[in-house]
Image (cartoon, rainbow, N blue to C red; front, side, top):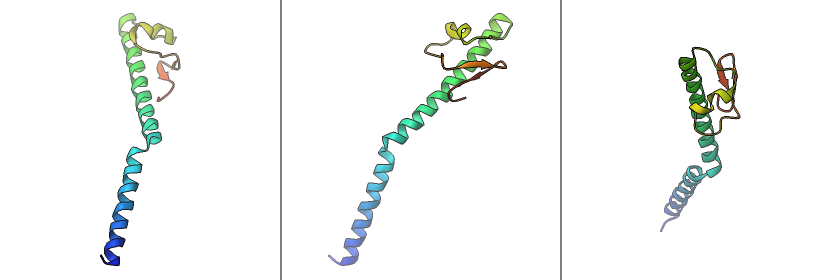
Length: 89
């Protein structure tokens, strides 16, 4: 085997390891998943505000008013000027 073949094999091996590490880096994956979940939750709470307005012909003033419309914990959100504010918003 020539030196150039060994160098090429080493370069390919290193690049495959780098790509594998970037793909399997769980910290970045968890952060991305958390941000996506927060954005989805924000949209869910905003949809609940709209549903509440349709049902009651008035805007909600407290997050507690939305709890029957949303499954899960929405206690980190608040209503500001008729819109949701909180994680991911």
